[in-house]
Image (cartoon, rainbow, N blue to C red; front, side):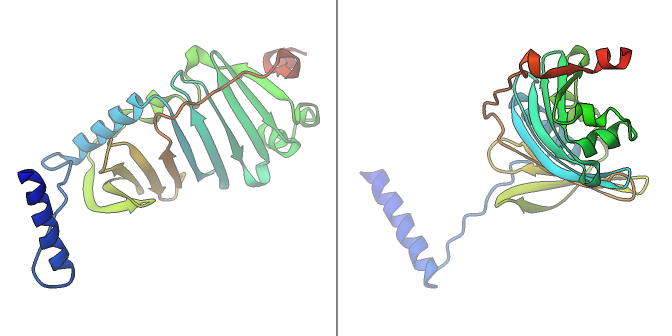
Amino acid sequence: MAANRKILAAAVVCAAAFVGITGCSSEEKDPFEGMSADKIAKKASNASKDAGSFRVAGEGKQDSKTVEVDFSVAKSGDCKGKMDGGTGGTAELLVSGNSQYMKGDEAFWKDAMGGSGQASTLKDKWVKTPNPKGKGVCNADAMFQSKDLKKLKREDDSEVDGKKAAVLTKEKSGKKTTFYVAAEGKPYFLKVVTTGKEDPGTMNFSDYGKPVAVKAPAPGDVMDMEELMKS
């Protein structure tokens, strides 16, 4: 009962402060207090990888073309998603075990194969290619590798979709990369923004720890790229 009275008393004081009678403050503690920007980034790298699964979506420039991506990565390292290459067409990507499958429209295959006449044959088919040692485009270790997160600077905190975030920046050779790390709950990467002439883009990370089911296409729906190249 004594504890309840103390809570009630504190609530009354804060309520009074709300209408301007007295003062009441509750400053949020910085979860990264005393940590360097590099250490915050390493903490975020470890937490993001340890989550096992996540979603990454955003857009960037590649060869002067805007490419949009949206992928969900499973704990196993398998993944599935879509990409829109603008004038380069659209495609679905699926990685399962040691194989990668891609299904694109004709515009995508024309762009990918330099205008090859095979584009019409490949369109809307799942095309299989090797995924060496399971380290394909959705490799979380490569995506969140900490060895490149060096010589960072911490800026003023910001928000990403309503979530408080620590802001870390790195500038090198005319390229600036800004990392947003969750300052509430697990210190996951929330967003990465790259600016400059070379490959600018924005990637948003979410759905950490949520299960992702990936199933390889039926064999009858698959064309093997290695076999096609032999013919």
